[in-house]
Image 1 (cartoon, helix red, strand yellow):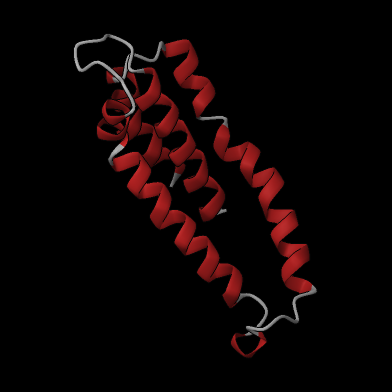
Image 2: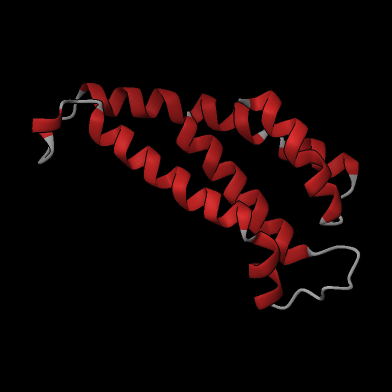
Length: 114
């Protein structure tokens, strides 16, 4: 999963005007969110007895993670348009708002997939 993300999204990040040095820092989001999210969700799901207990202990967390992945894909897929709506110039070499939306969506995607 991560190899495919790197291969497909690195050129896109560079098109947003992000420098190569900063682009490599974006990819640290996956391992960092994995180290944070996986233990927390594991602990919460082991103790889960909530309203959706009829679904089992893990399924409510899988449902929430899939919704996070859907939202993150929408953010990543539309980051240029959203950045333009928020004030990015189409002719600018660095699209700051688009890059921020991309990074947020990408890290949410990593958190949801973890």
